Length: 163
Image (cartoon, rainbow, N blue to C red; front, side):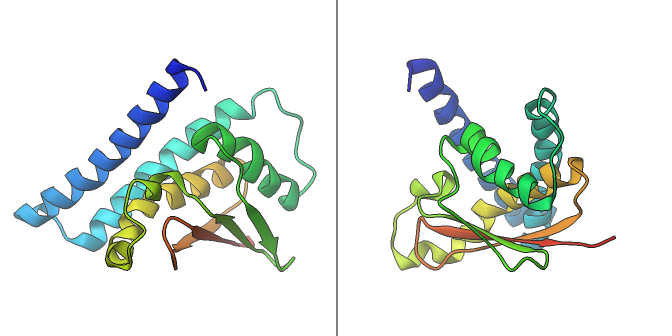
């Protein structure tokens, strides 16, 4: 990783942390409630995901199917955004996919202690939106949720909405 890539990654991590803390700071001062902060972060991620996937796929051949799209998200998309591939992709072949990242970049800055588990959802909302936005621009309507049982590992569950 060269100096420019390291700087890009550091800026992304700092920007993400500042977005989260800024929204929650505003909520504490009476401008909103915590549930709306999660929604705002998720919506920001959705828009960013739409834009990124548009740029990443402009020179890519059409995808064969839903599984092909999910593999692209786990390999190429995740590598570009988080500098590593998803560690594990599972599916029940009925529209539910589980993406597991054992060392999720946006959680590695936090301690691995159990006391921080309650704060994890606010640091995952943007990424849930990022995945949902990317899939949306590829023609897949989905619901994306995240779960953390031990930091910094997390699982993103993608439920495909059949139209």
